Length: 184
Image (cartoon, rainbow, N blue to C red; front, side, top):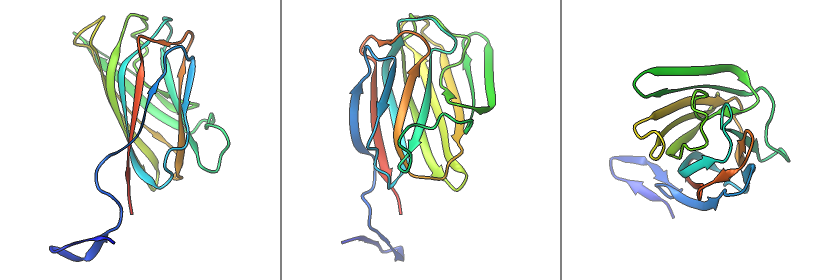
């Protein structure tokens, strides 16, 4: 049974409203972590990151890829476009026209001492999945504010997300919390 809205009588909401929890995932000790079985009817995802750190200083520290319901693995083709930057007493930025993954945090900050909290929102559109993220380092360089935007160039159901450490492993109780929202 759907919900009928009095101000828009021709519209019936048949999917639940709001964010639904898919799961909380502990990435500690992994060099690559994949969350599978994302709901393929979802039109919006929110990935929340808690205390994300790596045990290796590399440039960049970690990246992200996605997979569709019809593919058996994540997409590693040049189907990602992104730009990232940060603010900390000065500005810096980087970007990509076509890449095999999304670079999440700006490449200028490579210390393994950084521990970030953040959120990424992914929304499905007719041009693919549009992505924006906001992160902050609460431990090593308090006050650093990272941002990123990007797109995964597939207008298809997303069924998996993969986080990849560029050398080393996730540490310090790195957590990924996945929420989703259904759509008509």
